[in-house]
Amino acid sequence: MCIDCGCAQPHDHNHDHDHGHHDDAKTISIEQNLLAKNDMLAAANRERFSEANMLVLNLVSSPGSGKTTLLEKTLSDLKGEFSFAVLEGDQQTANDADRIAATGAPVHQINTGAGCHLDAHMVGHGVEHFDLGQTDILMIENVGNLVCPASFDLGEDLKVAVLSTTEGEDKPAKYPHMFRAAEVMIINKTDLLPHLDFDIEKCRRYALAVNPDLTIFELSCRSGEGLDAWYAWLAKQVGTKKKVI
Ligand SMILES: Nc1nc2c(ncn2[C@@H]2O[C@H](COP(=O)(O)OP(=O)(O)OP(=O)(O)O)[C@@H](O)[C@H]2O)c(=O)[nH]1
Ligand SMILES: [Mg+2]
Image: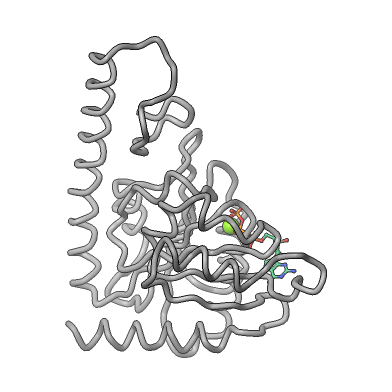
C-alpha cells in the first residue's frame, strides 16, 4: 500500500523505512489483492460497456490540464452526432459536474475524499445513473493526478492522457507509467506556446520513447485549433466499436 496516498500503486520498496522483509511481503500482498479485485470489477464493467455498444474513455492528467474544458468543448460541438454520458471524479466539489451539466449531457459526480484515483467499483456504481443503451460515448474524467490512476483499470476502452503546455515537456519522461498506460496523449493549451519555452517536439520524443504506439494530438481548447483531428479520431473510434459488435 502506498503510504503517501493510500492507493495500491506498485512501487519500489527501496526507501529506507525500518520495516523488514516480512512487512514488505505483506505490503506487496495487499497491493496485489487490491489490484486483482479492481481488475475483476473492471472486467465486469467492460463486459457491461461492450453489451451497450459504448465507447468508454478514461481521461487522466495532472490537475488543471484542461480535461473538463476539453469535455465541455467536445460535448457541445458533437452533441448532434453522438449521445454522451460523463462521470466526473474529484476529491471534492461538484464544480466539474456542474460545468458538464451546462452542456446538457447526463453527468454524475464521484467524490473520492482522500482518494487520489477512481476505481472500477466507483465506476460500476456511477454508471447506474445513466441509460447505457442510449449512450454512444462514456467519458470518465479521473482525479487530477499523474501517478495513481495509471494503475487502476476502470473497464475503459482507452486511457487519454491530457498534458498542457504549462506543465513542461518532460512530464512523459518523469511519469512514464501514465504515458505507457495511455493509448492517446493530448497536448492542450497550444495557444500559450508563444509565451512559454515548452518544446513540443521534445515532448513528443519523450512520450514516444516510453510508448511508441501513442496517438498524439496537439490542440487548444481556447482557440479551437486542432480540435477537428480529435473529433475525427473520436468518430472513428465509435465507428470501430459499433462494427466490432
Ligand atoms: N489558455 C488556455 N487555457 C485553457 C485551455 N484549456 C483549459 N484551459 C484553462 O485551464 C484551467 C483548468 O482547466 P480545467 O478544464 O478545469 O482542467 P482540469 O484538467 O479539468 O482540472 P481538474 O479537474 O482540477 O484536474 C481553466 O482555467 C481553463 O480555462 C486552453 O486550451 N488554453
Ligand atoms: Mg476537471
